[in-house]
Length: 519
Image (cartoon, rainbow, N blue to C red; front, side, top):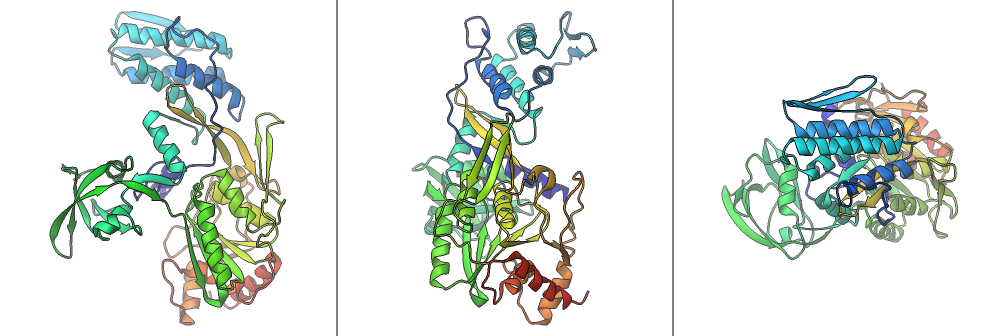
């Protein structure tokens, strides 16, 4: 369970997880600001610490909470000392004044809550570390470590990105990347192909699921982590990469030279299920999500669908704009979807339903679990608060902060928490999460969630166990699968023969089903 949480947090921060294409961002807004001008003369007419100044100014002016400059500069200095990494370097922290010693030299500094004073003290330490090391510690590394120290002292979701990481982050937010069109995973310490995407370079070359990687561009990939392999496979469109794969069924190696292409990341899966119920699975919210959703809704209309199961389980979020657009398809035009509140009272923004011809009259059940976060929580909260949608599953992740992305002058970037978001009824999702009306306890997988660190959480109206649901449905000869599991089947039963979008009616049907389950 701890490893699952750690892995999911990585995906929230925009790291590659088990698959070449699976890169997600937390809730972000991208205002393409020009770099802020610093107030101090960094390095006396040179460009030392220019990026650091931009970062400290952004944190001071834009961060969701008022800055504690003593804490910020202390974190920056300690990060630089750690970067120096010398056994002969010691830092003595005292209530009055701190002393930094390197060999037979030392310097002292004292931090207050005054930004200008602390900035001057910080510069003194920066040049001391660089000069005493005889320039073996580069100014660039010291500056980068100081920036990272500041950002790490803020919160889990704020992040500094170097130029390469920032470019990758922006590219993948668009929902496209230069790659081969395959999903990969690690199994038994070996890297395998899970599947190839339709009409992708990998599919056209004949690469198959279960093919295992031997080398990339002649480099043996034994011992590589999945993130490292993903970096080798991805790149700019129209560039080539050579792969050697082993096909277990044939016990033979095959070498392919493929040309990378712009690959469309599919974030929406649609299927019309029994009783004219549409099943929508949204895995993340990229720039392509609404376009893909529209294709599913078009098919649903052709099939005469009368209700929807919206599956947002394991969805780590994505773009705020996409969460508003997706919600708008199921709400009255003008109905509030979410609002955000920043540090200042004036920093308040509302986001409302966009479409006149929406599906607000169609009943819907939303599925969430402990890994439904950010934009997934916005959609769930909006539909729940509208009074039409019933929520089933586990308490959501509780990621209720908005990150704004700033491009810095050297091409690097800063993802900074600038506000928090709230459901239409005023629920602070970070503190209170999205609590389902029907709690499904996954006792079969042995990962029942124990709530810790969150007080005052609402309680579900009804609790059911997966084991009980499975036994109940299996006795009725219902074939359950990974995609059509017991929770999906429960949602289908609730929506069966329902023509009115009413949470109250859906809850009554859920209680009828629960009454027939033999615990």
